[in-house]
Amino acid sequence: MAQKPSIPKGTRDFSPNEMARRNYIFDTIKSVFKLYGFRQIETPAMENLSTLMGKYGEEGDKLLFKILNSGDFMKDVRDEDIASRNLARLTNEMCEKGLRYDLTVPFARFVVQYRGQLQMPFKRYQIQPVWRADRPQKGRYREFYQCDADVVGSDSLWNEIELLSMIDMVFSRLKVRVAIKINNRKILSGIAELIGAADKIVDITVAIDKIDKIGIENVNAELREKGLPDEVIERLRPLLEMSGSNAEKIQALSTMLAGSETGMKGVEELRTVIEGFDALGHNCIADVDVSLARGLNYYTGTIIEVKALDVEIGSITGGGRYDNLTGVFGMPGLSGVGISFGADRIYDVLNQLNLYPEGVSQSVKVLFVNFGEKEAAAAARIVKSLREEGVAAELYPDAAKMKKQMAYADSSSIPYVAIIGESELEAGVVNLKDMASGEQSQLTPEKLVEKLSEIH
Image (cartoon, rainbow, N blue to C red):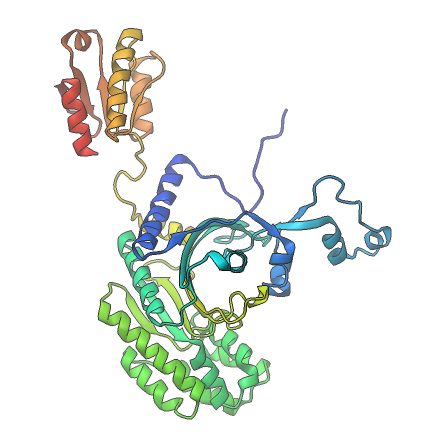
């Protein structure tokens, strides 16, 4: 017996109904991107390994899917490298390309490669799959989509305000209640500077970023393990336990960081972004969160993270300001700010809350029943007229039993069935059945096209 086919672990198939739901998410995000003036680009699924390697740290490099060279990929491999299992050297000799790990590094390569053709500031969005050779588990896949929007070539904080407004609009349209957590990298640097632990900034932020998951006492224990003395940890406590309104938090930070030029710059940037966002008005909760860190080696200013309020799940959107996106490709000093929507987690949220609009899985508006050659020919002409009016219509291809054709319409969530039998053909009418109510009405072909066009 032949083995049943399967797909690699960490990847998924999506049925037509699932794709309709996913496309609803993608289309919603894409429509908002366009409203804010972002323009779409795409980059290849595979990049040169020289582009990808060394950009994600040692662990990230291990998670890159490498592609064997075409033809005799062993031609440059030495026997001693095989014998010693020198994986780094073997990879260099057998692989020149790899699947992209994220959309950010390919975007940086794109900006540098086409810098003479791009008008700054450059606003791009990109919705494409990425691949990571990670251990598959719940909510973590080897193939998944990222939905990124970035502005490069501008230092203005209006970019951050616009991105926050864009996040608010996307989740308002998806009807997902969210909290946007906002911080600034310079505030965290200022805190580390004032408590005399500037050299421990990465250790501090990696630990405090876990405060929601493990609590303040476990965070403090982790800081002790990293070598921070108890008096320094105690000086951090008021910051981690900060409460009150955003204005009160910002005022408290301003008082605490008065001795740090870097910290005060971060406070002023945070104040400008929060006040600008509030002035525009928003449906989401905007929350200043000093414990938010998000990849400190990467971000240099505003940091953003979005959490769903009604579902226990990780971050569903994140991003922030970075000052040297393209520096690794020989074009230093180009500032940018960007966000990434986690489409797969948003999909899980909408599934759990059942927030899809009615009829999201419907693709065809009406199915014409096939009673035979003459009737099918008449139906086909009406189907063509409907399609020309932008109404999705379908003719069942075979003159099968009525029960089978109706079952097809029902399983495909087609809301209307059109019947042209011998008597309808003679009378020049179509019998239109509403599958939800069971009601039927006789219409001329012209009236049927008009009615379904209005419903469409």
